[in-house]
Amino acid sequence: MRIFLKLGKICLEVNKNNIDMENTTIDLRKCEVGDILIGRSGAKLKYLGYTEGNPYPHNVKYLTPGLGNGSRTDEGFVFRFKRKDTDEDIVGIEPKKLR
Image 1 (cartoon, rainbow, N blue to C red):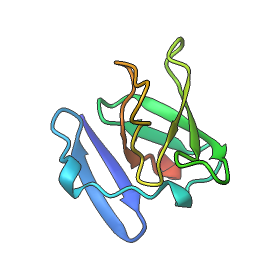
Image 2 (image 1 turned 90 degrees about the vertical axis):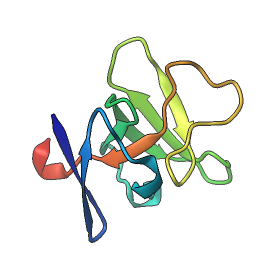
Image 3 (image 1 turned 180 degrees about the vertical axis):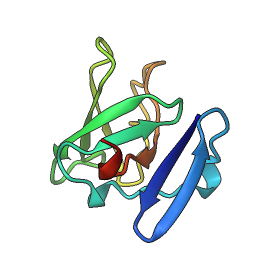
Image 4 (image 1 turned 45 degrees about the horizontal axis):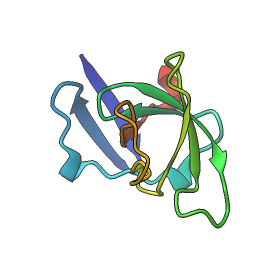
Protein backbone atom coordinates (compact mmCIF):
# COMPACT_ATOMS: atom_id res chain seq x y z
CA MET A 1 0.00 0.00 0.00
CA ARG A 2 1.38 3.42 -0.91
CA ILE A 3 0.51 6.73 0.68
CA PHE A 4 0.85 9.90 -1.41
CA LEU A 5 1.73 13.08 0.44
CA LYS A 6 1.80 16.62 -0.84
CA LEU A 7 4.12 18.86 1.18
CA GLY A 8 4.18 22.39 -0.19
CA LYS A 9 5.37 22.00 -3.78
CA ILE A 10 7.08 18.67 -3.08
CA CYS A 11 5.24 15.41 -3.75
CA LEU A 12 6.58 12.34 -2.00
CA GLU A 13 5.59 8.72 -2.46
CA VAL A 14 6.02 6.89 0.82
CA ASN A 15 5.90 3.12 1.09
CA LYS A 16 4.00 2.41 4.32
CA ASN A 17 6.43 -0.36 5.27
CA ASN A 18 9.66 1.48 4.38
CA ILE A 19 9.36 5.19 5.22
CA ASP A 20 12.53 7.18 4.57
CA MET A 21 12.61 9.44 7.64
CA GLU A 22 15.73 11.33 6.50
CA ASN A 23 14.07 12.59 3.30
CA THR A 24 10.62 13.25 4.73
CA THR A 25 10.07 16.90 5.63
CA ILE A 26 6.98 17.92 7.55
CA ASP A 27 5.98 21.42 8.63
CA LEU A 28 2.97 21.24 10.96
CA ARG A 29 2.76 25.06 10.94
CA LYS A 30 1.01 24.66 7.58
CA CYS A 31 -1.71 22.41 9.03
CA GLU A 32 -5.32 23.40 9.51
CA VAL A 33 -7.56 22.08 12.28
CA GLY A 34 -9.02 18.78 11.11
CA ASP A 35 -6.13 17.82 8.79
CA ILE A 36 -5.30 14.10 8.83
CA LEU A 37 -1.69 13.27 9.64
CA ILE A 38 0.20 10.05 8.97
CA GLY A 39 2.42 8.57 11.69
CA ARG A 40 5.66 6.65 11.15
CA SER A 41 3.86 3.27 11.40
CA GLY A 42 1.00 4.41 9.16
CA ALA A 43 -1.37 5.35 12.02
CA LYS A 44 -3.67 8.29 11.30
CA LEU A 45 -3.97 11.29 13.59
CA LYS A 46 -6.14 14.40 13.46
CA TYR A 47 -4.61 17.87 13.80
CA LEU A 48 -6.36 19.66 16.69
CA GLY A 49 -4.56 22.99 16.68
CA TYR A 50 -1.64 25.12 17.85
CA THR A 51 -0.71 26.20 21.39
CA GLU A 52 1.38 29.40 21.45
CA GLY A 53 4.57 29.37 23.55
CA ASN A 54 4.83 25.59 23.93
CA PRO A 55 8.02 23.87 22.62
CA TYR A 56 5.69 21.10 21.33
CA PRO A 57 2.87 23.37 20.15
CA HIS A 58 0.93 21.14 17.75
CA ASN A 59 -1.90 19.15 19.33
CA VAL A 60 -2.96 15.90 17.70
CA LYS A 61 -5.37 13.05 18.40
CA TYR A 62 -4.97 9.45 17.28
CA LEU A 63 -7.93 8.23 15.23
CA THR A 64 -7.45 4.75 16.72
CA PRO A 65 -9.67 4.52 19.81
CA GLY A 66 -7.81 4.37 23.11
CA LEU A 67 -4.54 5.95 21.95
CA GLY A 68 -5.49 9.46 23.04
CA ASN A 69 -3.99 12.86 22.31
CA GLY A 70 -0.45 14.16 22.03
CA SER A 71 1.72 17.07 21.02
CA ARG A 72 4.40 17.48 18.36
CA THR A 73 7.15 19.90 17.34
CA ASP A 74 6.85 21.99 14.16
CA GLU A 75 8.66 19.11 12.38
CA GLY A 76 6.22 16.47 13.69
CA PHE A 77 8.42 14.94 16.39
CA VAL A 78 6.97 13.45 19.58
CA PHE A 79 7.66 15.01 22.95
CA ARG A 80 11.02 13.64 24.06
CA PHE A 81 10.21 12.85 27.70
CA LYS A 82 7.30 10.76 29.07
CA ARG A 83 7.11 9.08 25.67
CA LYS A 84 4.73 6.12 25.32
CA ASP A 85 5.39 3.06 23.16
CA THR A 86 2.41 4.06 21.01
CA ASP A 87 3.77 7.58 20.34
CA GLU A 88 5.16 8.14 16.88
CA ASP A 89 6.53 10.97 14.77
CA ILE A 90 4.47 12.50 11.98
CA VAL A 91 5.80 11.70 8.50
CA GLY A 92 2.99 12.97 6.29
CA ILE A 93 -0.14 15.02 5.82
CA GLU A 94 -2.97 13.35 3.95
CA PRO A 95 -4.03 15.40 0.92
CA LYS A 96 -7.51 16.86 1.35
CA LYS A 97 -8.74 15.30 -1.89
CA LEU A 98 -8.19 11.78 -0.44
CA ARG A 99 -10.43 12.38 2.59
